[in-house]
Length: 70
Figure 1 (cartoon, helix red, strand yellow):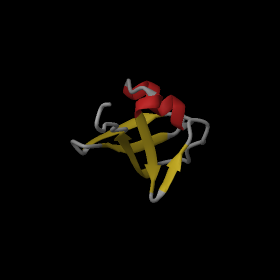
Figure 2: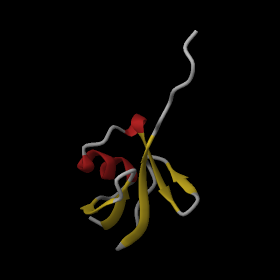
Figure 3: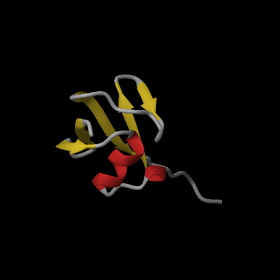
Figure 4: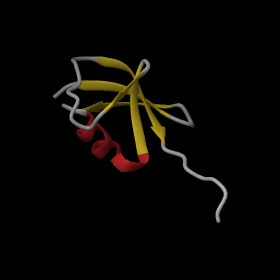
């Protein structure tokens, strides 16, 4: 397993989680993959991306949708 330090937005809560890939990270955080983006720097990571040892700089953003109804 890989220890990942992640910041969960918008509240900027920091957690450390053991996960091999992005999909496992979201599952361990109890977050739905279709409702969150995982970002490293300026790169959006897909669920299958393997995480590196002692990974830092990972952020989880909620997907916000909206707009004017018809």
